[in-house]
Length: 201
View 1: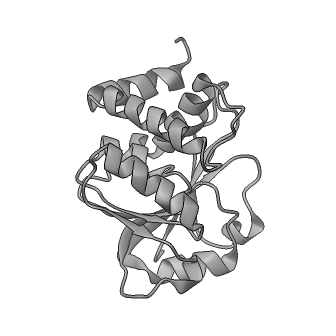
View 2: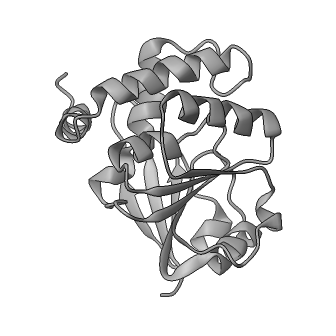
């Protein structure tokens, strides 16, 4: 592929030697998607790779999740958490979703892939206790509010970070907080930005 962003994507997954595992994830995701609506059922295989797999691992260009404790807020079928876990197997991954069927689907996928050190949380964010402490909290599909950001900050470690996947305009509530934007837009996925918000600073 000629697009430089796609080249970076392919370089990353080859570097980590994880292409086969990502292919398995796509297979299992599509299987679970027949039972629970995790991604659009009209999505083609290329759509899933570009709009979900490639999109999920975009932060790997800027952040090293090795050995980190990571919460995927609003995980659905394990996106973006599972693709990042595949790239960074030493990551301690927590998958949070308020919908039991989606948590079950993510669990089925993780079991089939024989992943280790992953944890499932079937709760709303508001129900999270402060005894959880994360290096990163990722959110790819949740409309972010000031209330959510304040809750997330409470469950971050002192040097922890929130990473938000955003297309189009960034919510006004997000802009209230000091943030850094990584523009990863390209012609395959369109406008895409990663927004980093630190617990402090």
